[in-house]
Image (cartoon, rainbow, N blue to C red):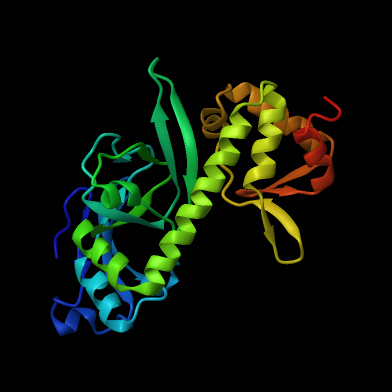
Length: 269
């Protein structure tokens, strides 16, 4: 099986039985190109569609349709996955890696709107409304993205109660998060804006440990909250020196959440 530059071959239910024998129900068996210094190799990985929150409630028949219709592409770091103004012809799923939703202001500045993690879907507004893409999406790492045709997605929205319920919950949470993010951007003090960003995007893990997983680069954070990379670096260094946060591999651990909240509210600044 040959694979072109970015296109990724998908072994789906229409493939010969010998090719899909190792794939379990609800899984995609795909081949992806991996760039090395000397050659291009093709490795096999398995993507379990049941691990994607939007799809986990589908019955076997609907899951089979998703598996048959979804196509997967590989993008390199900093590639544009979606272009603002483009045609909304697919619902997209981030299968691996990390993405950032960005917009460009009238004066040409790129503003990061939100981060996307594995299992997230995006591009739903354009296919529901039939409108052009409202923002761009850029790869922050090498990523695999699944493209589900809009016809298939819309059919599932209207025929699968589980998927429709998940979509409604997603849209409600998105409205709330966008409102919180707009309030964050209205903070005039840049240090407070950074502290509020961390407080907003942290997650509570088992054991009540508060973390930001897959911490964005300082430049990506700066884009999202309209400041400079140097300002982000100084603010995070200050938090680390005070013992409020601790960097651990690709995540940021909040050791003193109460102190972080005080700074986010302006106390002590």
